[in-house]
Length: 107
Image (cartoon, rainbow, N blue to C red; front, side):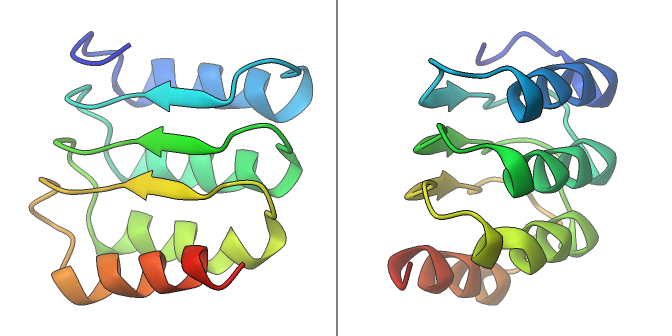
C-alpha cells in the first residue's frame, strides 16, 4: 500500500480491521501515505490487540512526536511486532525513533 495516499481515514479503517480480524497480514507497507498523528494513534490502538504484524513501514508520512509517543506507549503490550520503520517523518526526532527501536529490540 506504499504511496497510495490513504491518509488518516484510510489508515484508521485499515487498523480497525487489523486489530479485530487479521489472521494473515504479517508485513504492512504504508510508506508515503500522508498518515499523521491521528493515523499513528489508530495504529497504536491496533497494536494492543494485533498478534500477527511482524513488520510495518510507516516512513515518509506526517507523524510527529505525539503519534510516535502514542506508539511507544503501547509497544510493551505487543509481543509480535519486530520492525517498525518511521524514517522520513519530519516531526519525529531521531531520539524518539531510537527509543522505539530499543523497545522493539528488547521484546
